[in-house]
Image 1 (cartoon, rainbow, N blue to C red):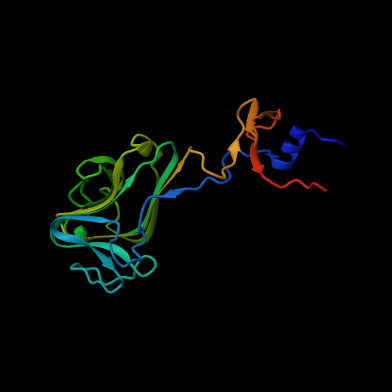
Image 2 (cartoon, one colour; image 1 turned 180 degrees about the vertical axis):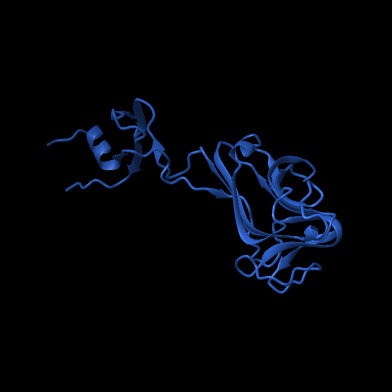
Length: 257
């Protein structure tokens, strides 16, 4: 059989593979926005600490002995985690900035924690905001709360040694902040008694609709236009009845023998 130049170009340069049933990009990958979320550097690299009053955040390696009834406690995982501790009433903020990408399709924040609220000696409750732990999205300079993701509440158990895994969908929040630089913030506030808030394995990931190199794209039109290696264009009809099909373009060398 004799092939014309156009047929040789199409057969020898591109292999079109229709993959039925693909409704999402095969190579889509989540982007992690938090640096040193497990504190395994043994430092607060990537993080910013703001303390008001007589308290602070500390790296805990299992030997740290806070000025509270809590004895030294092993890190949640690995060699290190982060612990709030105080001598007097305080507000202790641990935050990290990140830029919200555009085209967000999903966003999630997660972490593990331990809670030791010694206010139970006096009040047996959490108080909002004077005796609580909370996780928030702040503006770039940390002065404005844009969203409260989670907080302790009155009636919660004072002592929650866990570790307590927590995960929250924050897609809607971040979609309204695309392109902005904001902060993920962990705050412990106390004015009743000692309060140790311990965190580890902090992660904030986003997926976007922006295509990336090597991504499997969905077919959602009636035809697909492919630019060849010459000035000519190929129009390939989509296969009817294959919902959400995807395509791979695989370049190979033609056998001229």
